[in-house]
Length: 283
Length: 235
Ligand SMILES: Nc1ncnc2c1ncn2[C@@H]1O[C@H](COP(=O)(O)OP(=O)(O)O)[C@@H](O)[C@H]1O
Ligand SMILES: [Mg+2]
Image (cartoon, rainbow over all chains, first blue to last red; front, side, top):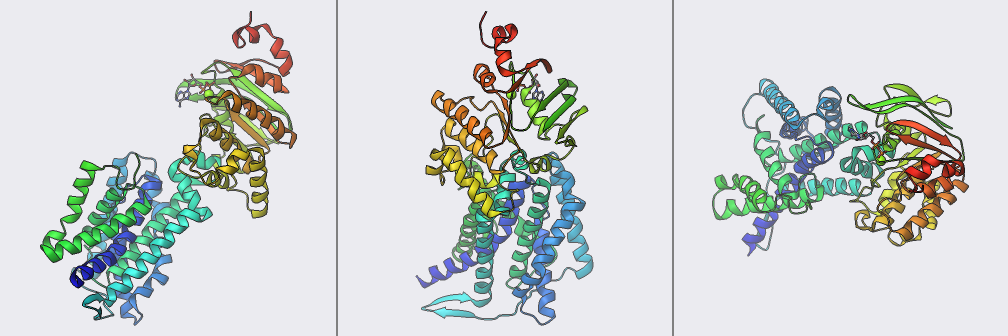
């Protein structure tokens, strides 16, 4: 029993980080209709931001406070310079462009930082109670992640700007008729999505070793979560992310860590076969 | 005052409006009638900035607004209740109303308007937390009008508000239009219900295949032979 709880908690905490990443991806998809293949690279840059922060002597998770706004601006800059051009273009265009962007960022990162494994670890050991073990670093990362995700959800649900974002996602034209500047909303959403991915990276970087190619593993998980949660559904992504975290952790424990990486693939296939609209989707 | 000055509008190469001109004086109700496909919706879409005229201009109080982005035209307090209502159907009644007032900065003003809309449409007030897509057709139309009012429009434009609405609701809609006009809001009304809309209108235009073929006082048009024949089914 304690083993099961250990697995469950560990999986949920990992799921919280996935939720942060996938929340950004599903937001960008839901509002802008763009499949952002460079989303994993924002996570990767977040990992390196945590590393840089650790090197300057600060506690890495705090990097979110400093780098969060910077990554938001980075997303805004990407939107204004390139993403803007593909918002209403055929999907193939956005796939090609963000794929190219992903390759470009990865390779610049390899050139700049090399390909060796690093980690921004700062907190060792686990809490233990009644035979349940919870890694301290993972607990901190998971709690910060879920707080940000829930905050984001509340923003989308209740804030005036959040309502405007949902309005544009639902129908750009009607939103504009209400006086909402849809292009400004797209810019904000791409900034937010990028910042969410980077925050996920900052937290993941304190738990896992990473290289400039780390985005490749994570984006696959983010896609699985987005599909399972219902494309564009933020709350769905949150729930699906927790599910994936627990499934992966269980597979790792009961079967094999190597196989757990396949969980995301299996989820994508099963969802598309049996519930293509996702768990919370309605269409 | 809204002024449409000799506009030409087309979809690709296909012309939809030719040299259309009309004036909507402050505080009046102006009605536009015409058969299906005459270009009524196209005209409204051009005024709100979805479509840009090839030639000609649209002016609001003397200022050219054609060519501006749609959201900026909306902020000049021109509200459209679109054909088919165009609600945010996955959001609640309350949220739809809030979005209607998106460009209003003052919370106090928003609260007052909301109270007024709920007073006009008590049904909406009862259903304020309901997802708007689950309302009946008539209730949705009332909500669409309510959302249009939330911006405090100088001009409220309605595209076939009685379409797909039960007769009892249609009465209510026309009653409300009267009340809205009394509050000082100018109304531009496109209606299939030609008899009623002409009766209510201070001035009216008849559109036919993209051109204004007839205009005049509402009551006068009701007596016009062509109108009686084409729209009222009278010999
Ligand atoms: N999106 C569109 N693309 C091409 N043609 C259109 C479009 N919308 C309307 N039309 C055409 O423009 C003409 C006017 O349409 P519309 O303004 O909707 O008429 P009404 O509202 O009076 O029924 C029609 O011939 C219609 O087929
Ligand atoms: Mg029409």
